[in-house]
Length: 270
Image (cartoon, rainbow, N blue to C red; front, side):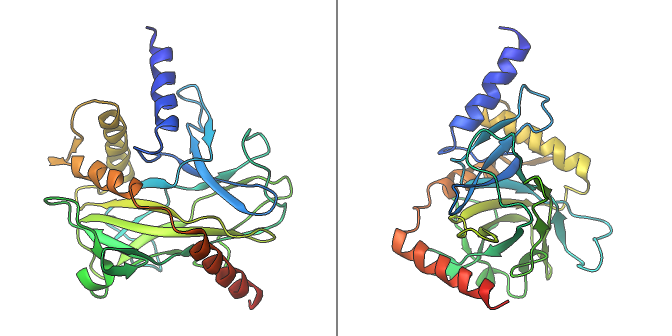
């Protein structure tokens, strides 16, 4: 089999196996004419036969950097502006976003076991055991800039969007996996269904080059390759966390409706 065909099959497998793996990609933002829709935007640089789009993904992966000089004025312990959010009129799934619409991102509380929080933490040891961040690391916060109700981006006049808000952990965050649930709100549309980003934080990931090296290793590991060892650390546990996130039950329709109404009311009060 030619290399180009192998690369195509790799990307196609990543797109179709959304129930098993998350997306190493930007987050696709579309609409159905009434509601904002979220999915995966893979290989936007067309390096592996793409781009490829889907509206099935609900769990995404993010790899933080432990910066020597945090981006001012935030002072994050760990930070990254990946994944970003993307939409374009050339995308073959969903409908275009309203031109000129503001786009905001909000944290969405959820429950695991007996705990409820917007962000959960697992240190990566033993079996996957996410616990509320507010109880496992008092004073540590997961945030992004800017947070809702302020929009982090505006859809341009041609319905194009490509924006990368800065995500980060502050307050003396520890190495491990952070799982956050969020929703996107686009002016003129109902909020999206909740989606998750599983974030990997490690003190050995000190720059963009190292983070990208790990992302490549994680993708290879997902496809049956060697364990993802970078900087002397085996990060296979991160994929266990992602698999766990993919197994979280979908919220009930009633709960989604209540949550969405709250978000809409909040935006109308701006």
